[in-house]
Image (cartoon, rainbow, N blue to C red):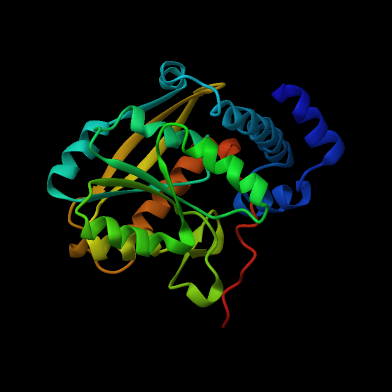
Length: 267
């Protein structure tokens, strides 16, 4: 099914093809046209796989899900919750990020698993994606209500693991940090670190590996259990570098159709 969709999306609809090509050219100025075209086609194959895989979350069993999305170092997250109420995980639009919502199948049962998301403009599509993301009892938290929810969890002393998709584009008025990311001057989302310092969260990075079609492995990499000891934005910079290394390792499974660089720094 995904292969059929690929033919339509890439050759007929040409979905956001101009955006993808511009992003790839700017991110990899050292690559030849042939190398960029290979990544481009690989991305569209992946994007179609991602769509079909995500819909499969509506019906897939827990046993089958654990065969397709594996997690490593979950014991470190569990142990971190012995001394912290929160573990915050940096996630990118990389691999099948929707399948990260199956983490409750692996983590300690007394933990609340939450993920921040941006509500879609279409109420129908938004409801579908919430159902997909909550299939294995992860809790969807609107990014616009994140701080309120997290502070409530903190007051209730809940044990929580919360995923932040941190490669979104912040509004220029709310941008505190710019970095060279994928060869471009890039505004960086800093909310994960700022909220983490408010609630003394342990910080981890989700390092995703696509092992073969429809099979992913997530390795949780410890960043710190002492978030308040770091200067402002150092943790964000570290995780952004981790994300860039991950993307360069297998670039076709990042979301190149996203208008990541639509905002420019004002002088």
